[in-house]
Amino acid sequence: MNKILFLLVLVLALDNYIYSQDLKVGFTTGIGTYSMSDLKTINTAISQSLPFDTQVVSDFPPYLYYQPTVV
Image 1 (spheres, rainbow, N blue to C red):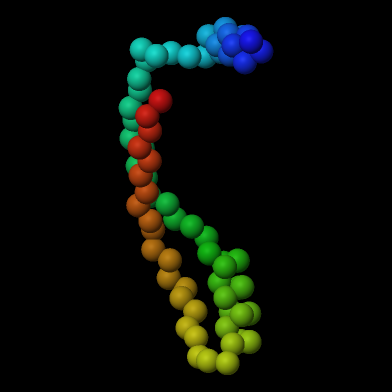
Image 2 (spheres, rainbow, N blue to C red):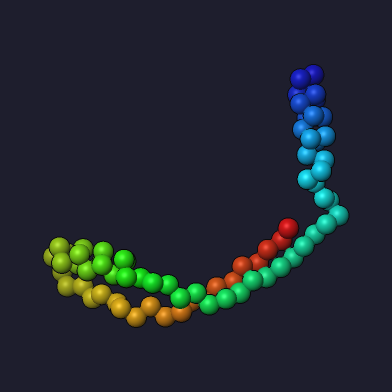
């Protein structure tokens, strides 16, 4: 009985936030350029303590990103 009452109160409380007939589809794209100076500093410090040779990459190209959305 308590579960039924709880579900009834929950459905009535969330009634304003539930839209079953409203569907939105979207798509976002862009180009991200990121500053990797902190990461490069960490990599340089760690590479000095490793027993083998490493190479630090200083060229970080722009990254194409996308984000599909369904609401």
